[in-house]
Length: 214
Image 1 (cartoon, rainbow, N blue to C red):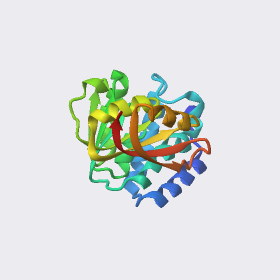
Image 2: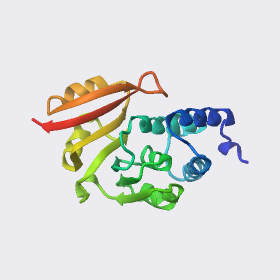
Image 3: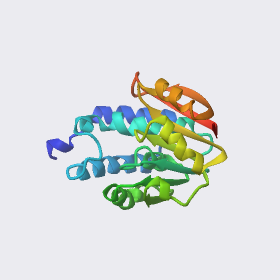
Image 4: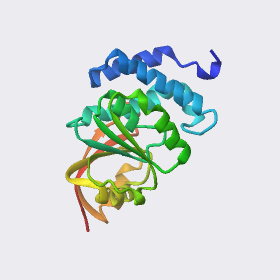
């Protein structure tokens, strides 16, 4: 195998062990995640789906980082959406792990085509929307997830249109989160809870609900 595709097997096994603490990972899901990683690496040669500096760390940096949201999901049978899904991080990963209905929303044609091609790795319902968020007509999501898509004030301006009244959001955020929360509170009233990221000491997961525009 080309050195470009050599992934640290020890790291992969460590991540799979972590995933088994998060969910009841079966052999099919393990194989699907492995095929998904291979697909990202293959396509990444032509399209910048993930940063080249993170390729050797893909299992920890991208797969586990996305999958950790699963432990905060209250009901996997609800309707989920991933805003700015990119190549499916975190939405397709969560679908592979067992989320029953996932809408992957991505404006890029190339990335949306990737999602359409490889959504078959999930046994659950996956719908791909190649569109700007402003043009999406589906507006009844129970849970909205996102990773590295937009600052929190912008995210909440989108969420207000699409989230069910009793729904909630799970966003993976970096070291500027507290500042983003402060800015978002100038425009919205909302409840939130922070959880530590298991992949980075500088990152947090923020769960948000009861969002009201000021």
